Length: 114
Length: 115
Image 1 (cartoon, rainbow over the protein chains, first blue to last red):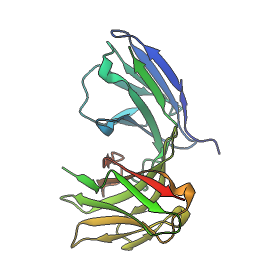
Image 2 (image 1 turned 180 degrees about the vertical axis):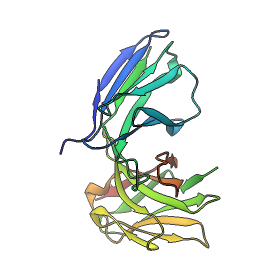
Image 3 (image 1 turned 90 degrees about the horizontal axis):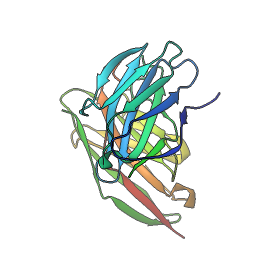
Image 4 (image 1 turned 45 degrees about the vertical axis):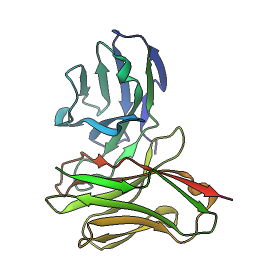
């Protein structure tokens, strides 16, 4: 069974640009969550999608957005990039029902903003 | 709001020694508690979870954790450390509410194994 796949794994952007990150969940998983990991702030919840609907949202500015497609694949977008957006962005999938919190993580997309 | 506090950002133990990583939680509702491990340049992997079925929870790779409500703790232990246990460990909490996948993580504890 294939795991959670995130693309791209590494990317470099400059301030003001925008970026789109992609996540393919484990087959059969309907929930996709996104987390930002930085040395200073640790792991912070961005949002969660279940069956194409945003079910939870963290405390991030509107520049951070996401969506989920009918095949459960998800994308997140960050517009008007700032230096502080440099981070490892982790996607996690789950069944989204009776196994609350049992997440399967991808290896992450490491974003560097110059 | 729920939260977890991990005591000790860095822990070093000798190979073969007991591993003890501390986690205390704060929650206004019965919590679900988790330990995740992150190896270098990888995502997080679930070690074990507590969902109120049993207070002593056994996980993968010989790890276990005990839920102590009176102490609001969920410490992670392993009787004998192995070099392959070197990684960062995260305690996490979520509402005991089906359909809520939001996890609140602690700041992590980096475990170093001394040969």
